[in-house]
Image 1 (cartoon, rainbow, N blue to C red):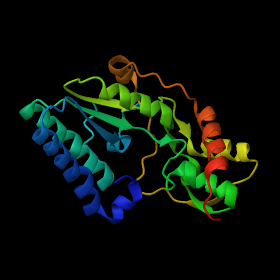
Image 2 (tube, rainbow, N blue to C red):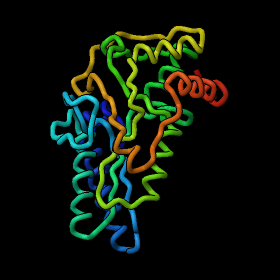
Image 3 (cartoon, rainbow, N blue to C red):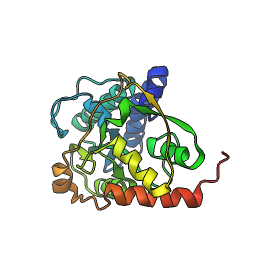
Length: 235
């Protein structure tokens, strides 16, 4: 279960799926045997409002801001237990604001495209003065594939771009491409939201040969072109 805001409404669902579900899959891997590598999709949300910028994997991440981050962090720790007790290779990949074609329609990039194309109202939290390390889906996928192919014992690895961009600037890029203004509703920042996320990706470069290729400007262009061609939902 992904999504920061829904986790505040349904914490039991997030714990059951993200933590207990991870345990179930780990137990299944043990039961069938021969599973050489386990890769967990985690999240940059585990860093909370850390003052250590950019985010580095050695941060204790012990102050999660909402149940989503808490459940994901717990799943990361559970992975270490299975590595220690049973020798399971376990790689944690912390994703940073993934966007791009075929993305979830509840994510900001898709909501923004809907707003500029169809005039739908969307909240703009804190005037857009929040930095996000927008990472194009192709780059994230390249990191996932590299992690699957490389058993590393137990490792936690950031998969971001390392170049945070203001939400307000991301909005501006989409507006410029579309030639329209988004229908934005000024909204206070939620307590569950962090102000900035920024990945230190030096570990990913070293262990996975990870090298993100798609700039935010190029990624927004690719996403907008895909949206115009493929979005057929009703207004």
